[in-house]
Image (cartoon, rainbow, N blue to C red):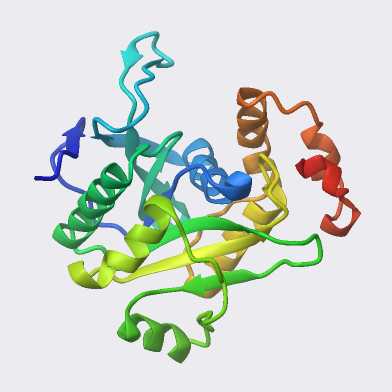
Length: 254
């Protein structure tokens, strides 16, 4: 039996939406920067919490000064052109393989039951400074055919070591739930908060998938600072923002 619980705060289902974007902490926190940046910049509402007993047992204070359980949030975000997307984001994911499977299955069930047109899983891939690709992966031949018919190449070589955690499970299990899921993996040197990779990823989504995220470096700068402060990174985010990617030393990402 799946132990995942969705605790609804508003309603009991998703509103009509253009896509679901899912991101949890990972390499360079690329996807998390995009997800948190969307919440920060645009009008948003927290619709529900995803709860699971295998999430790290660390409760935190909310902005209202109330203790909240470990959770993954489901939020609605109103984008320009009156477009709504759903953002599933969190600071943690289950610490067991079983927990990651169960949460992934619950997210896929949520997408299926709410007729989600596309589920975008955002992640990062450790690479050199010179690498700036966005790798598109999927697990369904029909989804791949649709992408390629829209001149979006699907990677057959990267990530060569695969994907771990919720990100990989959502993409790979998606055909079992008839959910059109796509993994979007940005090359990153692995910074604690790689805003340049996040900027490339959000720009790619806007251009290739016609989703008006309306994010820029300034949109993610504050989010990046918060992440870096939380993990005690002392390097200045301003040095990265004011530099080109080829100017950034790999020491910044250590």
